[in-house]
Length: 595
Image 1 (cartoon, rainbow, N blue to C red):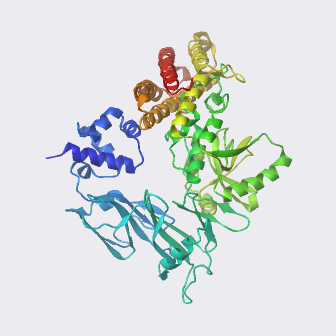
Image 2: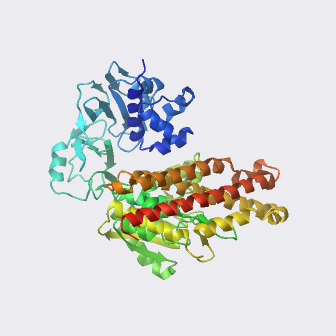
Image 3: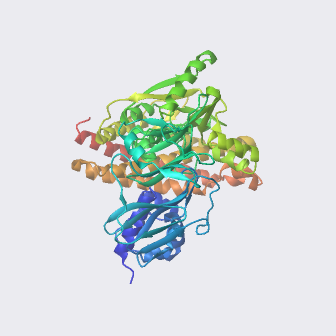
């Protein structure tokens, strides 16, 4: 008989392993967050129709979810420390009667890694006594059971569990050397034969392989002679970077893109930079502490820039204060000033303080600078438009060869007109103080005056509604103007939906803060923004993006008068909910003695 409690605990564990909130999992499954909560508390089981998608998202078979064993593989990664493949679903098939036995070689896995680096399988698993990690090298046997308490996961600094120097043909264990080097608390070290002597009869290139555990699991990193390994500031992770005089690349920086749960490009870029600096946070937290989760801006000339977080209000200052960051801004500097700025950018990159900037590639959206080549003449980046380029050139061998040099990053195509560098750290406010500051921003920004032609808050919602209901304009507009307005509307609605989703998640997180007197108001505020997002999300999903207009005879068929009326009504409903949010924010701030 299926135990709903056991299934719920398993779903909760696997969701957290994928770093998904209940809201994010619910959105991917097209169910309510309350439904996910009921599963995880054992009050109900997922519908049969939901199970295939749930299985895919969590990386476990349906049987492993509904009939959970005491031994579960939370993550299995086949890697050489550079290339990696997630084989969690595959490895879980070998768990039989709470025993996992698996012999690792080229024939036993569905993936191949074509390199002469040392290859291994990393395992993070859970048994009744806790969560542990283990590894097995190529051509070796892995055996785990309920008595196998492997490597515990430390809550603080990383801990090495295996280190080797050489290649897959011949290598030597260097754990003693790594323990010795840890004593010096280096921030980084460059891989040389002085630090890691190579056997005299070794053939082929030598690589340093480091396997370590931290609070999130077990990881492997490998690099050839000449590369540099960096610790994050909190010493919980390692990063690679090339370290020759004319190039420096910070590797393993995450991806950006619209439709990936980070639709505010400024907050997405800042989130990646914070992660690279070693700050544990979430995109929704960045949106929350900055106050960008409350934002709505609109210009009656219908411009895409309305969706830019900083176009008409300063949400950056609260964010930088919340994270204890000291920053430098450059805004539309001259060509003569750029050489000095490039040197400062290079210094920031070497410290893993990656600058964020707007207009790096394609269009004026925010991105993050990840490294440089040619002494800084070529800057590398992540932007919100990278996936389109990767897809366009996926079969281009010249492009793929360059990606090996740039470590998977694209070139910065144009000098950004705004760039933010991170220069150091300052004292951080408490999480509760950040909440109060965020609510102050909400109240200020919702009633802010027009700035540079952009209306804010309630004025923005009203101007947007009036533009939707101006039927004379839609009747007389040419197809190009009509299509452009449709595109702007879609982009602005995407930004609003993402912001209010982030607000709901951020507020829900604040319920865990030690301020019991605020719980009632915060709980109601969570309900307000969950309701708001529940109204916005399906409507946004129903709209046609301007990019899809080639499937229609006319853009006017893709965006009807009835749809515009429905959206105008929706924005009016959002305004009413926002006013309730304002009332609750005032009560919270009054209870805390802030107003």
